Image (cartoon, rainbow, N blue to C red; front, side, top):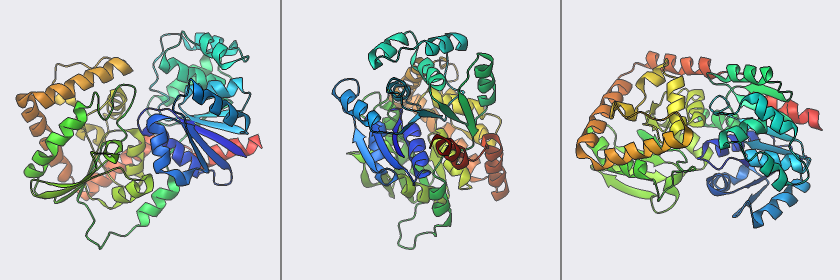
Length: 420
C-alpha cells in the first residue's frame, strides 16, 4: 500500500509523531509531503520514509504536486494537518487523522454545527471545500478534520475522554480510536539498551528546546525565548558547577546557532540531532531540561527519565503543564508565571503564545526580571537534583499512569489492515 503522509507545520511535535507512526508501517511505501519545520524534521529523519517531497508553496504551485501525490496514493495519514485531510476528501482517498492534542483544540462554533458543515462539504474541488469551511478557526478546522477523516487516532491525555464523549453526543459517526503514546517504540527500545559512551562524548545535562518554530515563533523572529536561553546558559553553568558537559539541542541549532563553545569554563554543544540519536542522549544523560512538548515528555517517560520542564514557549505548553499540575512533573515545572505572577496568559492559542513571547522579551531585557528568573529556576533545579531515585521512579510511574492507553502499533495496524 502506498501511504501519503504529512504533519502540521507547527514545531516538531506533529512531525515527530508522524515519524513514529511511519516507523510502525515498514511493510508499506511511505511518502512524506509537507513544508517548513515539518519537512525539515522529515529530512533529518529520512530513514523513516521511502520518499520525501517538500512543498515550497503548498497553496500555489505545490498544490499540483500534492494533487498528483494524492492520485498516486492508496491511503493518507495526517498528523494534525487538517488541510491534507480536506484534500484527501476531495481526492476521494481514505484518510487517517492522528492527533496528539485532541483535548487542546478550542472551538466557538458548536460541535454539532461543525458536523453539519462537514456533512455538506462539497467534493467538487479543494477550493470549494476550503471556502465552505472558511468560517472555522484553525483549531476548529482540526476538529472538522476528525469528522471528515475515515478514522481518527487520538493520543490519551487528561480531558481526551471528555472530548470524545462530546463528539459522540454531537452525532459524530467517524471511527475514533484512543491510543497511548504515539512515539518511536523501536527507537526507544534501542536507546534503552544503549551503553554509556566511553569516548568522552557523554553529557551530564541535556537542554532540549524542541522544534520551537510555529505560527508565530521563528529562529530569527519572535525569538526572545532563544535569546533568553543563550543569555542564561553561562549563568546556569556558573551557578551549577556540577554540569561540565552540556548538550543543547533542538530545531534552532541546525544552522549558525549550532556548534561547540565554552561557557563558564564548561563545554556546550548546540546540535539538531536526528530523532533516534536524540533518544540515545535522553536515555544516557542523567539530568535534562525540556520544553514541555508532549512527544518529548512521552519519550522521556518511557525511557524512565524524569525531566524538568523549562518555561513555556507557546500556549500549548501552558496547556500541558496545567493539565499535569497534580503530578510531580507539573509541581516542579518552570513557569513564567513564577517570574511575573500578575501577567495572565490569555486562554487562546495565538494570543496566549503572543503573551509568552512578550514575557520572554521582558525577562531578557530587564535585569531585575532576569535575576528573578535565574533565582526562581535555580530553586526548581535544586529541588529536581535532590530528588531521591525512588521519588524519580514514582514521578515517572505517575506520568505513565496518566498518559497510558491502548498500544499505538496495534491500533494503527488494525486500521490499515482493514483498509486493504
